[in-house]
Image: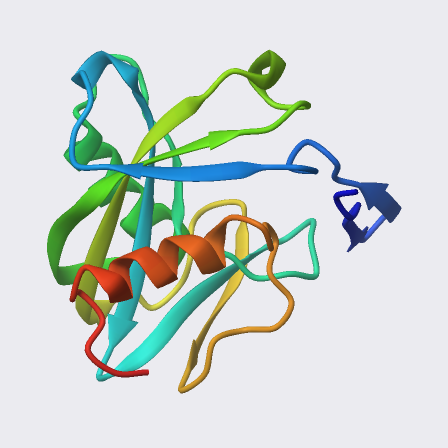
Length: 165
């Protein structure tokens, strides 16, 4: 039986069960029209970069929905700026990922592109729903999406994008 995960929010406790029972898969490519999300594994000076949404007490990889008329690369660049204030960076696609979960998109497989970024310069302040970022030597323990983001990092590591932690 899949575990249910809870996130403490500023207005109380919210059950975030859409990813209960989530299955994450990886592909080299899919039709571009299927790519709805961009998620970025970000590092700076060898350290991990995570963001914290202002309504959650958990951390996540920067990323989000692809907007109409936007390429998935443009979405990744926009999310890097909006969520962690990245100004200067190198950005490389890692692979396509998908998530299937009973409470997400009626259980249908949703697709995104996973990227890896090395950030060299950040904006002085954030201008989005993100409250803060952390730059750390270690992976976080309190993930916003525990059955998903660690698997994305493992896949990037398996494909040689992450050389050391």
